[in-house]
Length: 296
Image (cartoon, rainbow, N blue to C red):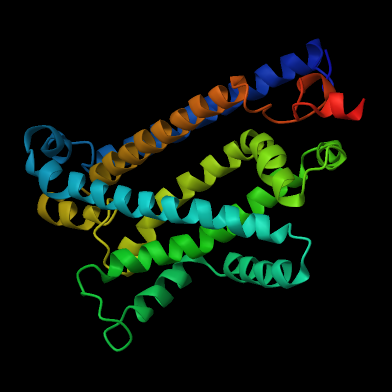
């Protein structure tokens, strides 16, 4: 059995892979043992460092849950705005008109090249009292959302453009053959097929959006999940335990997001309305209804 990327490993290669995997597991175990030993010596594994997360409900109701809610609010709003904006920008980059393609390309390249933290700082300055009448308590929230939307919409635009360009040229030619215009070809033929090809990259970018909300907590005073580490540590003197719990919450939330996206991807691939990622002729039943009849 072979792949277009590599040949299937033989017996010797498989044996080497098992040896390398075993060495990695042993080294990883040793590193973890060293880290846990060091934490134990410093008293970071003592029960009193971890018990507040089980015995004191205020840790959750006062700090962790409100912080998680703010993280989800900022992430969800950024996703809702960045996804359609990125799709429009991506389609604009594929326009046949230079007066559309040029400015959109400049917008995408500009905001994609600037660090998202810098965009958040610009957003915070923009919402300052001398420019806009935005209450100080919600200014960090909107600064974070603004930075995330500007940066991630530019990245999503490139994902959309790459997804559409990854489709076989024959899809466009077949659409033209039956008299479909450029817009009809894009929205009825190319985009539906490119969605499943783009979905893994889009999900990865959504996870990045959710995690990047922590940048606002670090420098803008946004009360998101990670920023609660400072308050919990100040009250319970358990920095390591708090960071571990917060990291676990991030893992659970992001795992749920990727699981949901995987289920959507499977449904899209099985749906009759989409052919999924187009890799070859065998995977396409009839992407354009009536195309064969018209061609005949």
